[in-house]
Length: 310
Figure 1 (cartoon, one colour):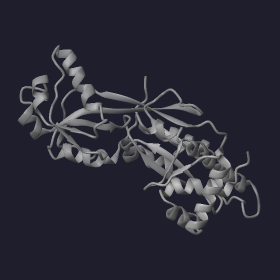
Figure 2 (figure 1 turned 180 degrees about the vertical axis):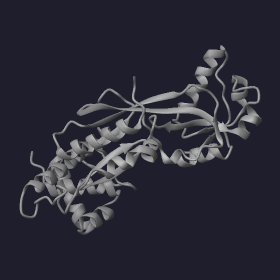
Figure 3 (figure 1 turned 180 degrees about the horizontal axis):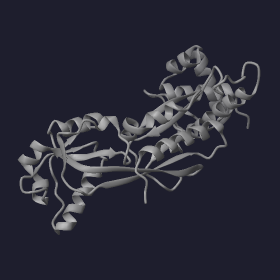
Figure 4 (figure 1 turned 60 degrees about the vertical axis):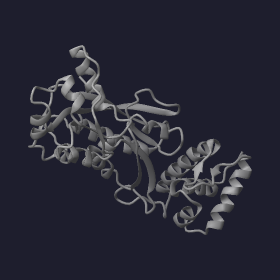
């Protein structure tokens, strides 16, 4: 079976832009031309590839061809860089048409250490997808991303997995909050009454620490009132504002800093205990100089800034 590169590009654009109209703008063609290419691709595949919803989404067969479309785009860009004269690389080793690499990452990594790593990769555009570190890996087999920062160590089918480091968190609150709620210490009873700041409903960091506290005390796990604040900066701002206590972080490697965590003079630790979440980089098992450069940049930045397991 032969796949037409222009039709695959149309599929990738529809999924990326969320509509046929958006894909047409990205490809500099008419919506009718995009629709014709998708219909032709569906005729070749013998099945529906795109759900005509808002936003448009790939079907299961569409996700298979979406992965192919991403790979064709990536390898095509690398081939163009080796051809002349239009594909001749410049001094930075890039051409005038950089390839786009979609990556998935958790919000805390995006807010702290990730962007300097991506900025170090010349000649590549990035399409960043944000999800919980337990869920970013789900975007790999769907074809939505080529690489994912995830808490899952075992590689998904067709991918490789390499360790990056630890995201380390420590329970913290403002001094005034501690004086009000924890005058007798951060006991299970006090933790059950004091408000808590949680990143999202899938965030388990605070509850992991609460379970450890309850286990050590031999009591039931506290169930405090919760604020849900799904943004790293705003989460930390909520703790600074005294709305509740929360797991402060991610904490950088000794000798480095993350600006998003500063200033923290008004914040104190509730415990010496930390909660560590290992991070891994999973990416498509595809021989690609572009993906190799992205991987090297992410691993190097993580090695410099994240605590490493002993």
